Image 1 (tube, rainbow, N blue to C red):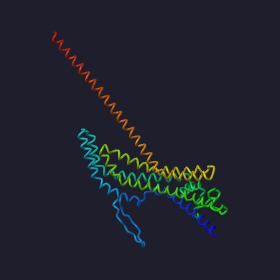
Image 2: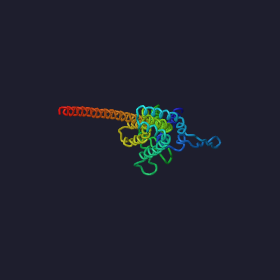
Image 3: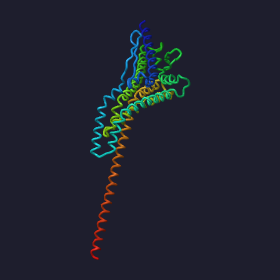
Image 4: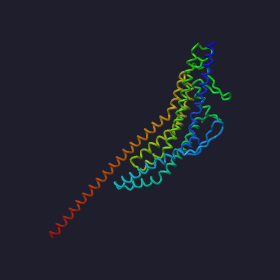
Length: 348
């Protein structure tokens, strides 16, 4: 008797894990949409919360961006003062202009930059959903795309009854059937658990991406203020590269998920299952992969830029030395001509 109850309990657990995996996989890319509830923590506004009993409480959030801008104003002053001193010692007019322009426009430019991050987030979210839905008809293109990935695991979604169906033609789900030998259902349960963990990691990493973008937007002020000081301007480049990498993580992750459609023709059930798991884990790793890739590219381009500047400096010094040598030789020739003319006048 207990064996039958255990079998039913395990079957229910497998279906529960499969349905949770469907929900996590479906909503993973929806968290990239910056709703007002997300964005109010950056720019400020009113936050409405529901309390026990059905009442609501409205709280005015100051916005982390506004707080950080005010807190970083002393840093801006320090950067401007150092840049002015360095420019005065070097006699650099361009350095003086850098300090002046940054001191005047850095604060409004910070808010403009954060607004552009908001627009870019919306654009990449639209691109992500288009990648998931392209090729499917109707408004359920995203569900169909996610179902194509679940098919790799031998799972299918019944939208009418809102349930997950296990395809017993797949080896792992045959072990959960009534005709399977005792104990084999444990393997099917472990497979369902791993699928759930993979989809959970994908959701967690997409939320991680959104949260880090919000943090970068909140701390845009130090990056923009660093433009005032020439030695510190690399901070702005690093900040921008991180934002770009995280913005592109969602579309690239969606493209990775769409690759699952072409893997449905793989030879065996276990290969399809493992391929689907790898697919989901790779999509989950995209925020970290894109951060590393963009940082590497920006670092390489910075090295090329520095090499170009050094080469241009060497070329400029070479031209300057050549011109200096030519002027010295011309001066010597003019002195010789003058001395010869003086000698000729004396002989006469």
